[in-house]
Image (cartoon, rainbow, N blue to C red):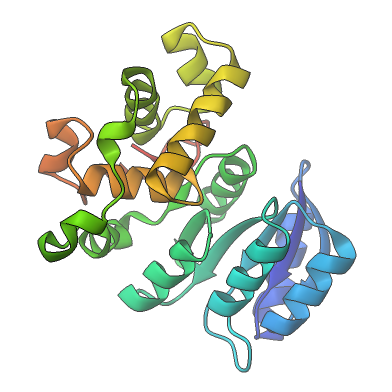
Length: 236
């Protein structure tokens, strides 16, 4: 996994880079001190994943994420920040970030979360989960403008429910007796029908609209928790 580390504090950036460089399946290909440097580095280095600070002077992580995703949508982005502000969280997810971690995450949690996102999953610090659901909940006044979740086929609904439980593409494949390529195709169609960019947004929107099981609606904050060291940080 080729990773670019972005943080405006040189000490923090250096510590993160050195730590990640010691992980066998991670290669730190560069560092950047602000959003503009991050955009230039992504163009030059073509990383698989960007570990992105949110609040930085000049071009912040939110704007950098938007621009990177518009130009290079295949690059995964995980926010790593001290900010629990709802506005930061919602904006960077809407701009395409696949993960949002707080800087009090343990080293093990960080590594497993990065691996999970690199494999196409999602990562979200459980302490901010309830805030995300609240912000993505539909406004009854604008109900006519909402994505038509009833356009999902029964099979697509099954796939999305398993993803919301934390299943990887491989696990969805095994449980539904489908090939992984078929699962990926279903996810592609789901994203298009819900008008979202990634599976994290898809689960948030679908749960907010009541598309998923009632049990997942009862305790939204509690339904998001750290996975095991094997599973990584998942939507569970």
